[in-house]
Length: 237
Image (cartoon, rainbow, N blue to C red):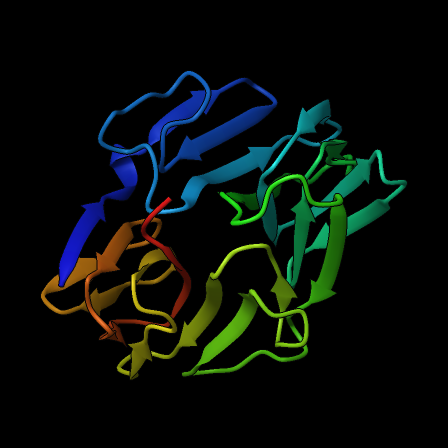
């Protein structure tokens, strides 16, 4: 088993006034040659958008973009004709493919939006752009892994053009469960949203990240009531 530990306060940080963003991996003006990616997981941004503000229309191409709202409402508009609002308890995915323009705004007048913006390098390029958004609240599991993303359109959660599986773990204090890797050559990047957890001898606090690869399983234990995102991705680009 190989591992890498990224403590929360070692992430890159950008304060644009209207946007405060922590970058687990190199992004925009934050560059760290040791933190370019975790396999095909290219971006993990922990964003806070001020009320009445947002990202203006901008392009993407050949990237799988996943948004997971943590607090507040985020309005999405794109060149495919989509207008939607995503909220906590939902997940959004956009396959940029041959090219798409989109914008994201916080239309609330008195509430911040907090969300994770995740980019995964796809295993297919030049695909037709695609948008999807679903509720993950209705299938919420406690003390178990809840799959929210996979490569299979017929499976639970949203799907992307990559052999990746994302799970949410809402564990009560003292609960533990073994996670089994879906595909040889994959690794898992564990990101603690709330609480604290333990994998092997490594203790993880809120917003800490921990990558694991060259193993087929590991055990995740909650040291307190916790919410944790597990992102399993191929390690070879």
